[in-house]
Every structure is written in structure tokens, then in C-alpha cells.
Amino acid sequence: MIPTSTNSPLAEGIYHITFDWPVFASQLFAFVCIVAAFRRWVVPPIKRMMGKAQETVRKQLAESDLASSRLAEAKQAYDSALAEAQLELERLRADAQADAVRIVEQMREAAAAEVARVRKQGRDQIVLFRKQVIRDLQADLTATVLARTEERVRGHLAMPQAQSDSIERFLEDLEIAANTPSLDRSRIQSRWN
Image 1 (cartoon, one colour):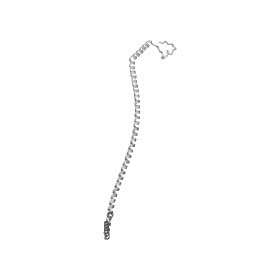
Image 2 (tube, rainbow, N blue to C red):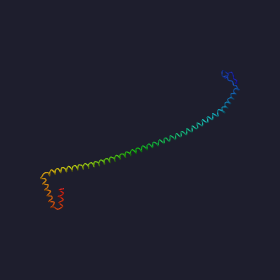
Image 3 (tube, rainbow, N blue to C red):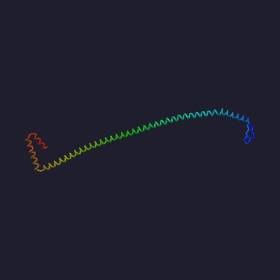
Image 4 (spheres, rainbow, N blue to C red):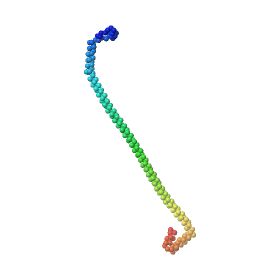
């Protein structure tokens, strides 16, 4: 017990504290037993759990680092693939434009060739049609001229005076042909032909 004076604040009221050594020693012994039991049976499993937890955290950190490096690689691969796709798109676009220009040029050339062919064929048909029309007109004109000439000659020869004049002129030409050399005969014969 702690000796206290009457003036001391520990002696007054509810704070009257006494020191009991056997209780202190028993409590100290109990505390040491609890600590020893704690160190023997509680601390090792806690250390193992903490070690496992730390190992798990280390693994997760390593996996996280690996995943972040893979993510960086994947992002870099994605960026390079995207850039490559852009280049491919530009190349395809340029190829498509070149193909379109080439196709338009080919179509223009084909259209120009077709127009030239159609024009030539049209001109040829016009020439053939013109020749045919000219032949038809010549045949019609010849037939008409022959018909008119025959009609006029028949009409002229239908008169008795014209018949006798024709016969007399024919006889005169025969007489001249008989009396002239052979060169002039051909001229007289060609008049009758």
C-alpha cells in the first residue's frame, strides 16, 4: 500500500488507490503468460497469413506490372496497327481514284471508238443509200427517157412525110458510105448507132 498523507489528493474521495503486490504479481504473471501464448500460438499463423498476403500482393504487383507492360505493348500495337490501317486506307483510296480515272479514260476511249464506228457505219450506209438512189433514179430516168423517145419517134414516124424523109436520109447515108473510104464509114455508122 502506498502511504498517503492526509493532504494528498489520492487520499480523498473515490481516488483512494492502494497498491497490492500479490495482485500486481499475479496480473504480471498472467500478462506474461498471455504474451507468451500469443507469441507461440497467435503470432506464427498471423505471420504466415501476413507472409501469404504479402506474397499475394507481390504477385499481384508483378502481374499488374506485367499487365501494364502488356497494356502498353497492346496500345503501341494498336496505335501502329491503326497507323498502318490509315496508310492502307490512303493507299486503297489512291488506288480506287486511279482506277476510277483509268476506267473513265477507258470508257471515254470506248465511247469515242463507238461514236467513230457508228459515224463510219452511218456514212457508209448513207453512201450505199445514195448509190442505190442514184441507180434507181438513173434506171427510172433511162426508162422514162426511152419511153418518151420511143413515144416521140413513133409519133414522128406515124406521119407519112417523116417516114419518107427518114428513108431518104438513110439511103443517102448508105450511098455516101459506099462511095467513101473506110475511115469515113465508121463516122457515118456511128451517127446511126
